[in-house]
Length: 175
Image 1 (cartoon, rainbow, N blue to C red):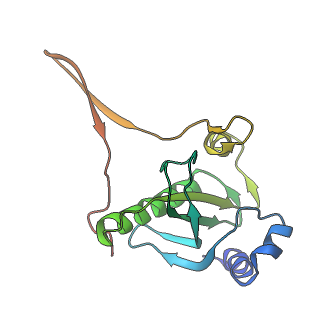
Image 2 (tube, one colour):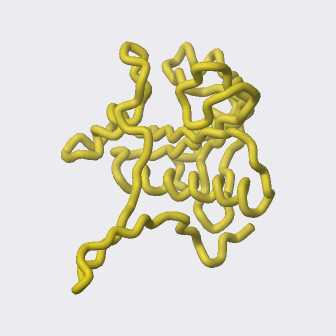
């Protein structure tokens, strides 16, 4: 982490959420933690955790009643935010899921949000579309994309076969 990352991270960590909201960081809620190492998956510059209510008609992945948690991973860069920052955040998210489900044996509703902060956004390719595709559209009440699935295929004398692929994690998760 270089000087800029540290300075902005300190400012976010040390400021109250209302001040940050007034400065334009509208997605910061919950308890803040700075420089959180998530096993061997990576380090979130800031991680927030907030209690949420999953009521009837909830639009997330865990419909129903009851409380859950929202983990928000902040990756902060002093340059253009691009695909490498996104992939770092995705790695951290995978670490949180693995830690909660496999290590802590916690089975409760939770969501994870990724927030990328930088001097500018890399608009030279498809990366810039991510926030539009995954954000919740309050006008329509939906998300454009609610998940990503991977499949491998094999083609043999018996024909074409597709195999769903998921559950990838590090051999040494560091927990």
